[in-house]
Image 1 (cartoon, one colour):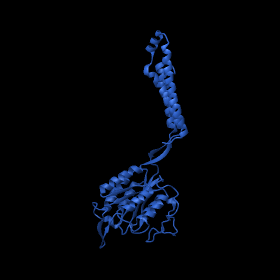
Image 2 (cartoon, rainbow, N blue to C red; image 1 turned 135 degrees about the horizontal axis):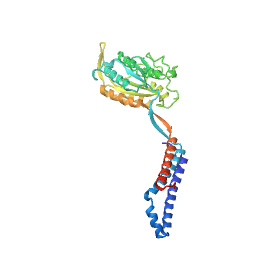
Image 3 (cartoon, rainbow, N blue to C red; image 1 turned 180 degrees about the vertical axis):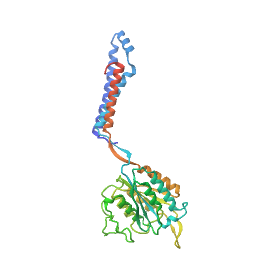
Image 4 (cartoon, rainbow, N blue to C red; image 1 turned 135 degrees about the vertical axis):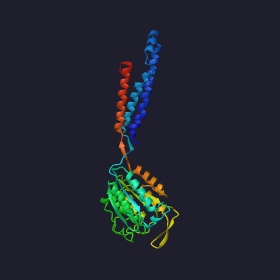
Length: 343
């Protein structure tokens, strides 16, 4: 919680002074009673309110403390429901997703978990879907229609190669259409992020916003292998960081790799966890590792809670002012009720 410290200094000085003044007044009253006649002392003791007499003054002191804190204009970061959020799912559909080290196979397990995730998100969050292998494409523009999202996930078709960077850039362009991210070079072998390329993707550009500061959306990127084509994933992550977009990465499958066969050829596919972790770190997101289908479902469940809420700094002046008024009114009411006067 943040305060204007000059006001808090006043609180630190005035509150102890008020307490000392009250204690001094009590001691003075006791000293005066020692010199009164015995009849008056007995009468005062019989009618004395006991410890209750301290409650209204304490409440008044607390009210003054709350007023000083209100004048300090306190601010705090609070968690609020999401508002107009968009989530883009970037799903790996490379040939390695046919591996059966995750039952029944990686692709089916990822589809089931992604659909469960989409169904459990709050209905006011839009979902877009990007599929990537050797190239990347939008298979579903962001929408509130959950059935359209589920149908797009069911239409995945396996392809050769893995273009993680291209998938991330297409996802960013889908999430931020107003940013006009240059995608002209994301579909071929050439890397448009090389120095001298005429592109919005130059890695040496100054970031316009802080990484992870974009609060209206995020990208969830799933991969089970390593980048083999297209844009460098790390440099694509720089574009995400430049626009403040968080990228949550999910590594699917085993880090030791697995041998798969496809159209008469075979190869070992190994998860590139280092790259996925770096993408998440650069953008203010988080990396998750899933070995099984249930693991993936748990990860998507954890992501759901992050996307359903957002953090925002709010001023709490009204809260402390209302608390001060309530304390003051309570002190007055108790004093009138118990003693028949305001004192």
